[in-house]
Image 1 (cartoon, each protein chain N blue to C red):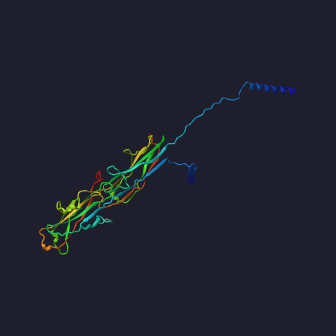
Image 2: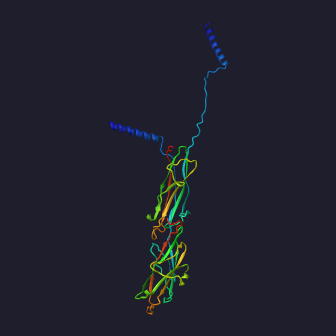
Image 3: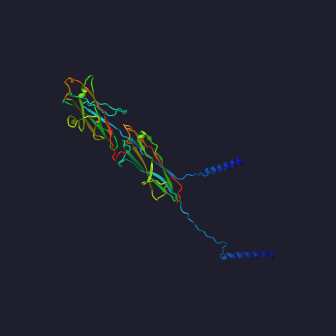
Length: 177
Length: 203
């Protein structure tokens, strides 16, 4: 009789389990999901490249410095356009020149060479450049004057080689607005 | 003991910072970019003034290599007598290779007349000059004026052009026949000077 009781119990459990399955029930709890697209991070840009560079004589006429010969009284002007690209929400930069390291064959007292002057339009370049949405034109200007006080035949056929004049554009902390 | 311990602690911290930076290859640099331009070489012009004498036919540059002044002999092919002057000419050319406007003026200084040997002819000799545009003009008596201490200065001689400096040497009508055959040397200084011809004025 003991075995009969065991069999009956097992059958009852099996029946109960079958009823549960038959009723389509599930043992899972609630859950849900979602996705997010953080987007693409895009870097800005910082660059400076040369634009047009040209020499002009005192009348404003463009000259070829490789063939032009200066005489006392001449004052020549060299203008080099620099195209500055600045992109970035927090971009700011400074532009500077390395200056002139020339090879001077003239008597120093007979010539005057200006420092490199950086301007935006007609104004001095600001301390900090910030993006404007377009390429910014900075102009570097140098003047060379052969003084009228030069006497005799001093410095006939002399040469003044400017070598390279460098410019650096350096990112800086964006100024507080 | 306190100080060494603090130093050791500081050194350890510094080492840790350095190692940390090295480990992550960190840098404090921000972006930068550079460019360079080569403005080129400014060259000075030459200041060459050519001289061609007549009747001698000699020619030279006013300045010799090294910058010394040249001497040129004009020569003489006819005899000088009262009422019969002799003439000579000098074509002066502005041969500068200046890039811009470059004009010169030519100035003939007062002539120095010196006797040759024991002669006394010099006091009867007058040197006159004028500027012209052609050598042929030198043989016309018109326009001559005695050279004085002020000298005689030409009009502007632009580059690549020339002017003609004419000389007339005459003998006073009061010159004694006894001076016949005597000779003099005549010398003068010629100066070329740059004019301020830069288009917008000299700087």
